[in-house]
Length: 351
Image 1 (spheres, rainbow, N blue to C red):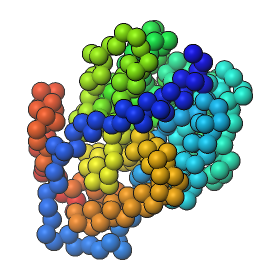
Image 2: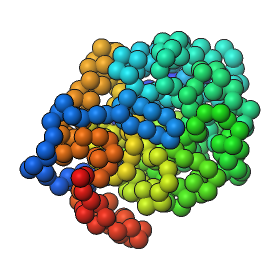
Image 3: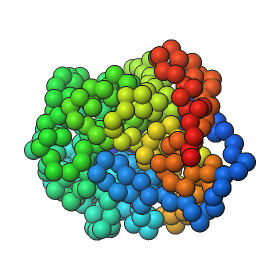
Image 4: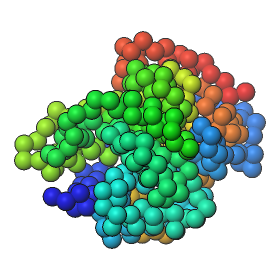
């Protein structure tokens, strides 16, 4: 099977397998504020991740590219929606275009459709510094994502089996590239130990990519004759992964992994994220209902986030990170077993 066909298969299986919504946000409850002392007019959605300033904490996460005209159309539509709503956007892995220049347009279309927007390049942890620089140049990227997808690769019939040296390669990309480097998981979450290793080599922006969204083990198992079912439920739920990352500190966190609503976004931010990323939810809306429906969904997410922040008395994203909340259920059990005191969150104050 060609790499291009595999990219198209990933889109189709992502749509058919859906998202489990087992991200853990149902275990997170805000403490109600009867006297929030603010109004919707006072709410600002501006935020920062590392050196980057964003007009919204919501952005479109990496999905596709490298699958010919079909992935080109998807990326163009996503870029147009991002431009309309002023959102940042990441492209899918550009390794396909580095190996076959004919696939470059499926990525370059994003910059063409949104010439002044914030765009993230994307490569896997097998990438060299030179490949990272070429990926950045290809789309005039404002930052580059380096994705970690060990479980996907192990489940993929033709996937990688050797992951030695990944941290060293990431360290060199951080040192040698002129734009910020975002390290992201693809849906299996990050532990506090992983976060600490990344911080030790200079990574300052981390997307936890938690379990609960598009399941790439499930997708790859759809392509296998002998199913590796033990990987289908593998990973750290998004909510727990955010708390693990926050317990390390020192990095701008991005919450992703199954987010579907503004309430999910607000909870992710309250757990420590400075930005939140959606992928599968946006892809389904785009494919099934079109770009106008996606633009309307983005506007509704912003409107709902403003309402939620008003209810909590949080005028800014930074204040939303300090509102009190209670963690219960499986997420509480996980974090307690991992030695993390969840009462830190219940005793916070936005003021």
